[in-house]
Length: 524
Image (cartoon, rainbow, N blue to C red; front, side, top):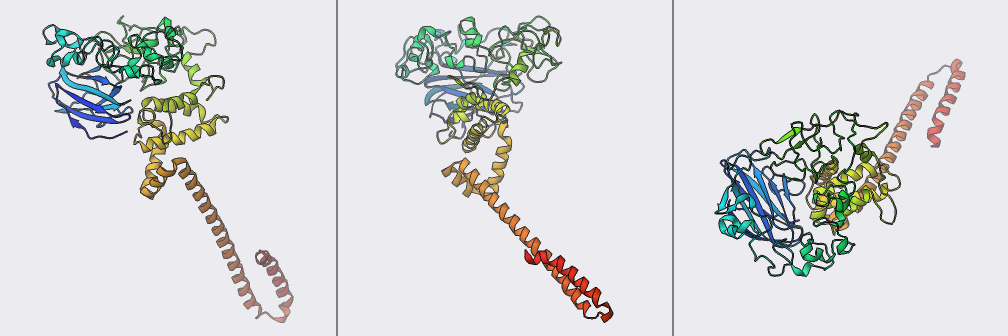
């Protein structure tokens, strides 16, 4: 992935940009202390750009960003000053990185907005155009003015079939040439675009369960809001649909029940949503906590009990009214969370193999010279790596295959300069030490031959050096021992010349003893 320098972008300014596939375009926006909130809007002219946002990390990426905008078509993110990660400096700088999941042309705007929780009335950027209604995918003629950023990008092209698109009213960013080209394009995966000509599924169009739910998302370990419905089987097991209220942990970390209201009766917000409250408690940050596209109470981060963010703009979060531990458990019932943590092999063979190793490979993609930043350096890849490490490192049947792929992934991460995955923190520390000691020479060789080859070569060389050192040490030890024994014999011989004749027999016996002591060293 390219690392372009950050370019300043003024609040209220819409900029046009182009980002190459698997590369970045970076921006920085100064936010005044008076701003109650800021809103970021991106509209693809074509392609599928993602946006990474952070106040405290320049040049954010998928593993370091505070907020991620990876929706299809026009996407927006409102960040309120109440958010814990909102910058407190004056002025603070919002770092914006646009990543090209594929080559993309886009329109980007960052502007000051009102706080939806304290605004007395919905603010309008133009008469009849509410600020909070921008970027909803439909062009509102009242908002089609520069002050409203052309309805947050929705009106940038003519509604109802702009040039080269299937339907701009529904989804921006899908040129007609992408439909049925054999490549799955999320921006085209809507009914109006013929489901991308079935590029995103092996099933026929009439078998697509629900708009927005891609076949690859079903039962993939993450609860997707688009798939969490009856037609899609509630995303398989991903959304814990119908799971019992049984849990064992005193704080409810293993609660996977269906409660979706707080103790005061407030309705819970979906964990995948960021309105009305911004947060970082997402599946991407807590992949094993049962979060995602549902609003059931959970405890992923060590609170005293399961909780949720509420849909009430005036109340950020509350604890939930869940039963006590074990209260709803049948005899010998194991909570679903515990089953997921301890069940399943590294790889289950069959017509369609499954397991953490399969997901690891599918999520991180090719890890050799064909590795891409978007795959290997994604938060999803790091999550899959963590899960695979828990199941595959001790699996004798697949340990070798797993270890080879891990080595390739680690080197790809190092080459692409994305070293934020905690699963490989020790490796990155050792790699940094190797580079500081050996300099760029080893890195250059590794680039040409691959990390695995260099690792084996260095390991082999180290083994040879250790072997040679052992031989040398053994030889020196033997020589030193022999020299000491010889010196002892010479000293005893000098003393024997002064012995009286009466002591001759004793001297001969002593000499015989010394010969017995010396012979093993002389023979060796």
